[in-house]
Amino acid sequence: MPSATEQKILDTAVRLFASQGYDATSVQEIVTAAEVTKGALYHYFRAKDDLLFEIYRLLITSQSADMDRIIGLGLPAGETVREILASLVISTAERVDETAVFVRELHRLGEDSMTEFRAERRRYHETFLAVIEKGQADGEFSSVVPADTVVRIALGVVNQLPMWFRPDGQKTPGQLAGEIADFVLAGLR
Image 1 (cartoon, rainbow, N blue to C red):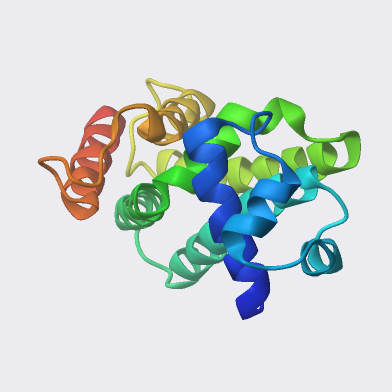
Image 2: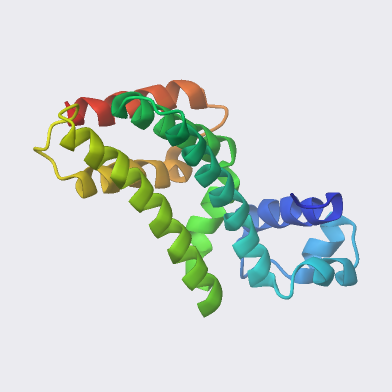
């Protein structure tokens, strides 16, 4: 859990990166808007790209913990998939600026951060894949569409939310989560 100062820096960076882009945002702008010193920023982050990675790390850590908790409930595969997707859609929609910044600026990560990002993304993908495969093996889901294709489609839809979801739009994150889960589950049956 970030400290209050660290969270203030992160929130400010998200807001500025979302509105003006990563390249157009200077460290000075971040510290001025966050009302902290450069020393405070560098106490928590070695460089600007560390801010970018931390934005993602906090999001994926939370989403992975939610998925692990849901799987730990021992629900049937269909309910597990519904709960995982609902949690993922809601957390992505509620943190749409963080997701948008990261998706748009991902290519700016350094090699070490990119390696860590890929490992976390792979773990999430493989864990979700195992749920789908188990449902197919148990006969709860159809095997017409390979499990890896189902996972790529489901996660692809969620990854695109920042492009079109608006917090002030007609649908709440919960409504959208239900519709996306229904769509994925319909394709599995």
